[in-house]
Length: 429
Image 1: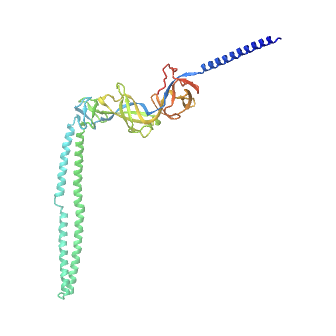
Image 2: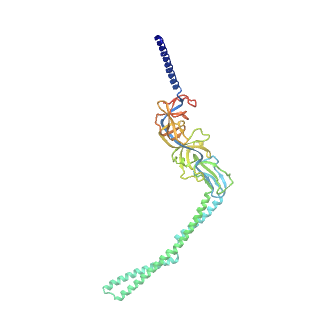
Image 3: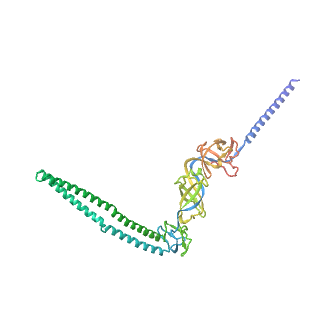
């Protein structure tokens, strides 16, 4: 082949090779651009982990009771003579509310008063009257025996002196000694006899008189008590909530005549499971939500039962509140919320950010500075409303996916656009 022809063929081959290489490079660039454009990016909402205060709350339905209540039951059977109050009347402790028929009781008091006064007079007579004749004779005998003994003692002493001086014979001294011994014996017998009479005869008479007086006084006091039962008085401050009888009807023991309730404060009695009741203690703050009351009523825990209710295996908790303007009606059902614990500086995330696996483990999708979401295991604490406390796994300032995390693969790049719910998902600062 001629040289010019070979040169022309070489130039054609080089041109074709150049065109082929250019085509390959352009195809590779287009393929890389297409791959970059098809990398998955998820639109989510994010929230920042922040420190704040969260409360552990325990809530339950409860029934309202008055703080104090008195169902006044008469102690005697008698017709109602007069009522001094109506339903709705405000009363004070000790106020007279009603009176029962009591003319027979008043007569019994008068009769027993007379018997008591008579017994008093008899007792005074027994105390102040002369001693019995035997006792009086014993006293005289004892005095005479004492005088005889004293005289015999003096004679014997004088004879001893005279005998020592040789003025009297020995027989006279011995006779004086015998007389002294006899006088001493007589004196001892007389004194013992007097003591016996005073200890038995006189004391028995006084005991009998005292017993009659005590018996009469007891009957008199009982009659006065029966008469006092005819006056029905209020044991507490409060409001009359029930008065089933009318004047003239028979009041009987065992049937309430009046019911008084102290409605200034009310108590909600709630039944909590043992695990929840263990979180609550006396003094914890609480609130009521009651029908017809627009705002929550502040309250406090006043009692946590120390034992389970055997019928329901629950713990009864009493929550007390001031009943302003009687807006809380006794007997109604209210919803009680008790604050069992307050944690400050707790790490908080929206509850919607928490994912729970079938085995119960909890996690969130945390977003790094490269806008890539990674599944992060967390341990949760208290939940309040739409916030939950994170005990471990996150730090303050981290970002987590708050909407759109469900089903999001680990390592997915995210953008803060419209989430699955259609809401704007701008990351909070």
